[in-house]
Image (cartoon, rainbow, N blue to C red; front, side):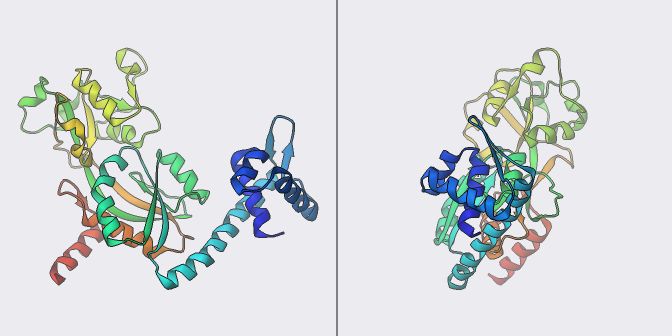
Length: 318
């Protein structure tokens, strides 16, 4: 058994197909199939159940896969350790981010990141929270920018900032005449939500004290998959919605017929954090990446407690 064999097992488990796995590993299918068969013979177990139509991993195969991922990360850690000895901030950093954060945060940090950490290669993916956590567990990304609390023991968290929610409404809405919008003002309003799976939808429901989604009527059919589409529905007069503060820098803020203002509700915010595996060896790279984020945020958000203290120390030194 060697690391190459484990890499082949991981590829088949990921793709569910020997041919696709072989292409991913840049070997021929007979070579990959033969090596996995040799591994199964050596261990005297069956890792994959093969039929003409599918490839399914067995329960013992799943257990082996868990160890294989850990071994591959440790092998990668050896390479990264050597690299870190030369330059701890050099090399690729695979970051995932949720769709309601990435389009608004990345424009703020990409140029500063390139200037301050020129040896770091950012590899960015944008997916919903559950998918990112699964990819993080499977060692497919190194860390994830999330806006929900993660309590799994295998993950650590770097709190970054608290992002308030703003209420968005059509220009001819009665809210336009209000100096402050409070919780009671949201009662009986048509609250537009993102489709299920987006953490922003759950957070909006929590802020507005909505216990469950509507299942009947016109509002039950209005489920947008992006914040931009939700804003278009607001502009067309279908209802109101909540938007995170960084999204106020989006292109929709001009010419959309939509007005937004902060909510006068103390709890109307979300905590954005960088979530990572405890086993990830390049902690200095994550810290440096987090520093670039918090150094380039607008004043519409508030730094998390530890970040706030670090920023004050930095200002005193300068």
